[in-house]
Length: 64
Image (tube, rainbow, N blue to C red; front, side):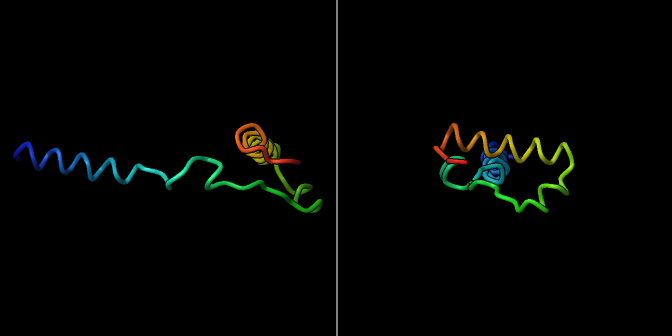
């Protein structure tokens, strides 16, 4: 395999790992649930949702 082909394969593989243009604030939004949906969350799901919203507050200025 020639060097050009190897480089092309690496570039193609890396291109699949890119994210949408823009940072977190450009592609994410606050997660808001109804009271009944909150009651159904597991502890792990609640922590993940809270972490997501806190990150948005810090980076994007989201308000609770």
